[in-house]
Image (cartoon, rainbow, N blue to C red):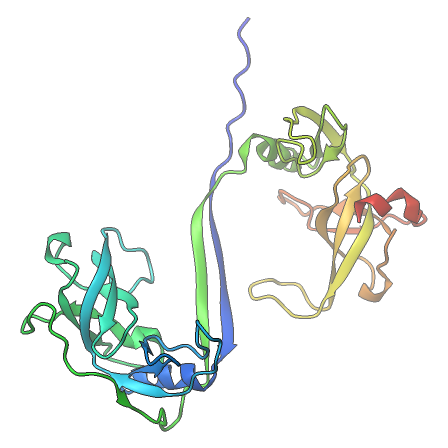
Length: 323
């Protein structure tokens, strides 16, 4: 008789992305508007140093900084690293160097891409200049990249910082920064079993052999006792709302009308509450202690939402330790 082989651990690509919107103060507004106009601005600190990119508060004294200066579009590489496999949305589609460049007139370095034919063409101390984007909108990408400045001598500094009032027509007052992280995610042994059970419309957790708590979703180890959890336990399907929130802002690409309720639900037999959306009841009637059950859609690998079971509400003492 041969032993059964362990189930394959799941792996899948995962993308996490969201737009981050922020308003700009006078210093950042002037810096980004300046880039749109082909001007690089820095700010002078209390000690007289020029910082590029500029900051609004002195890193040493926390004093508010407002003295803007213009620096040259040329500078010196202070350090660098070669990027042989550019990722989507990076400054250049071909291999390039990430470089810290101290622009002439500045005392700090700016991180950006350096276009070079190969790592052998890059060195600390080399002279570079800004290559401006063909279309500029008031963003750091208005600097398309840096490129070698062939006509300059190594170590030569061209000009210094000159005062600038930071005034431009139609200043940039806000930006939207697109944050994106894509990677391959593996849930591990415990959560692979949990996900596979969900595809069969079952919820399976794991029990700690020491404190006997049942964790759902399972973690593979008890966070309290520090021992492996290998004893699988089926819980639910019904459970109790321990706490909840009312969502009033519609998420992008999520076809759910607001307001709706998102809750912590302690499934029967579990010692850890999981997350789930509550449906089948007006949002303002959801309450702590509400008894709920999962609702599955055809082909769904996890419950679409939870709805009331019609049972009496659970007593507070029955779930207070799970809040």
